[in-house]
View 1 (cartoon, rainbow, N blue to C red):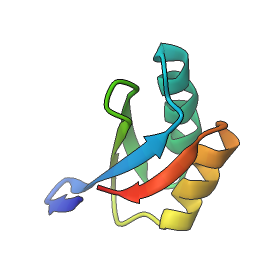
View 2 (view 1 turned 90 degrees about the horizontal axis):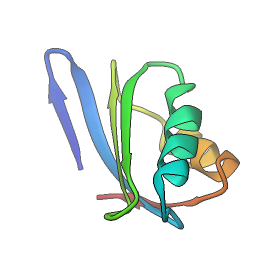
View 3 (view 1 turned 60 degrees about the vertical axis):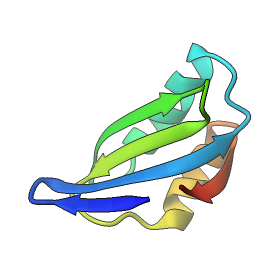
Length: 77
């Protein structure tokens, strides 16, 4: 899911492998480092990662960041 507002773009991704707060932090840290990312909220209980950015993100860049954190991006919700 992607929505666009005057303040930017919000995209929700499904990530597999998250089980705890440490997982959430690892993913948030890696995705936050991407250019244009304003905020990241990862929720292990649902496997959802909500990313707010200044513009549309490259899904492959997000996939690489999630992979770097040790998890797998299943795609957009």
